[in-house]
Image (tube, rainbow, N blue to C red; front, side, top):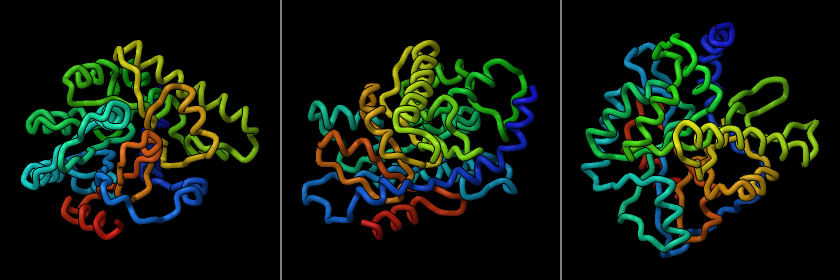
Amino acid sequence: MERLLLRKLCLPLALTFAVCVFGLWAKSSLPASAPPADAIELPIVMYHHVLKETARLNQYTISPDEFRQDMTFLKEEGYTPILVEDLIAFTQEGTPLPEKPVMITFDDGYESFHEYVFPILEEFGYPAVFSVVGVYADQYSRVDDHHIRYSHCTWNQLALMAESGLVEVQNHSYNLHITNQGQKGAMKTSSESKSAYQYRLAEDLGLMQQRCQEYLHLTPACFTYPFGYISKDALPVLKGMGFSAALTCEEKINYLTGDPEELFHLKRFNRPHGTSFQQILAKINKSS
């Protein structure tokens, strides 16, 4: 219960930190260049929290009506939402992607996804990627203290949604969604050796994989970096554990050629309150 109280107090801070700070390694290792002529453009949009209370809407929290408007826009403009599994099939098996693919992603695992987002996905028949923090799923599966402002989905709720085929649960770490005492998400700390960092990362991600296998009967193929913090020593760990993709928070368009390596740095645009999907796409076009 003490832990739940701390979670409630820290939620505003967590949402503030939800802005993705892209690591220096990623910036230096991805020089700007013109995309290949035959590359497929894939915009990925990143959401976090959904609430009806107008006073609580912000850069990382939108209303259910705003999300519905986004889905309506996708339908009217002929976009087809896809999942990470579709990207893996595209790169590993040559399975074609739709003409105008788009990816809808939600981070952190808030219960508001189950309450507001999932019914809209069912209405439109659209799939979405839901990156979950394991420790919160454990926490809220054990207690009855649920409030839409701060609670996270239980494993039972996640199982129900995953079974629908519309929600693809991915690994957002077991307990690395934190920024304190020198730790920034899944990033290597200044005091850690490479081997110590990689062991810690593998232990945490492995625990989340075990939880998903136990409660959801699935194994996530994608890791979503908490807060977008990246260390160059993380990639060998992801590959060694069998991950095929990773979601970052760098706000750029994805150009896919079929190279599996491209999936380890999938870029996304944050969708804040008050910004239409049209404006997000305009931002994407401007950056490309």
